[in-house]
Length: 327
Image (cartoon, rainbow, N blue to C red; front, side, top):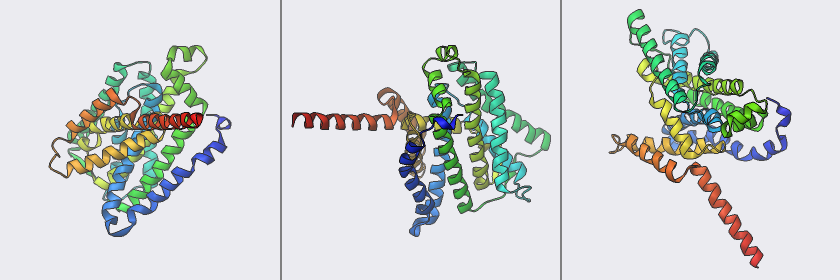
C-alpha cells in the first residue's frame, strides 16, 4: 500500500464528521439514567458495524460474495475460550484480541489462496461451507475428544467491552479508508469491474484479493474475542452461528457499499430494528421482515440507503442550479 498516493488534505477535511461520531460514541452511552442500557445497545451497534464494514471492505469492491464471516468470528470466540478462560486468564485481553485477529488472518489467507480463483456462486458456497466445516470440526473436538460441550470465558465489564469495540471500530474505519484510497483500492475496483482486464494491466489480482480478504477476516476475529467475554459461555452453536455470516452482508447491502458510511448506517438501522422486533410481539417474524427488506433493497435500492441519499442530494443541487440559471 503506497501511502504517498493518499490525499492527506482530503483526509483532514473528511475527519470532522467521524471525529464527532467518535466523541459521541465515547460519551453518549454513559449519559443519564439510561447508561446501562445505552452501553449494551451501543455495544451491539458496534459489533455489527465492524462486521459490516469488514465484510464490505472485501466484497463491496471485488463483488466476491463471502459468507465466511461466522468462521472468522468464531475463531475469535475460541481464542478467548482457550486463552481467557474463567479459571484464570493466561494472557491479557489485548493479547487475546491480537491472537484472534492473527489466527483469523492466517486462516483467511490460506482459504483465499485456495478458493479466490473461484468465482460467483462457487466462492459463496465454499465460504459458507467453511463455516459448517469449522462448526463440525470444533464440535467433534469438544464432545468426542474433550468430552465437553462448551468452555466458560472470563467475564469482562460492559465498559471494558464497549471501549475495546470502539477501538476495533476505529482501526476498521482507518484500514478501510486507507485501502480504499490506496493503489490496493484502485486495484480492487478494477477487479470488481473486469478482473481479466485488471490482470492484463499488470495487477496481481489473486494476491490483492487474498490480502484484503485476510485483513477483513482479522477484524472479524478481533470482534469475536470481545463478544466472547460478554457471552462468557462458548460452544460451537454460538461461535459459528450462520446468521453471523448473513446479517453483516444484509446490513452492508442495505446501507450501500459505495463508501464507508453505507455499511455503518445499514448496520445501525438493522440492529435497532432487530432489537425492537426481538423484544416485541413480532420476535418470531423479524428474520422474515429482514428478508423482505433485503429483497426490496435489491430490487428498488441497488445502491442502498447511501445511494438513495446521494441521488436525492444530486437532484436538489440540480434543481438549485436550474433555479439560479433561470434567475
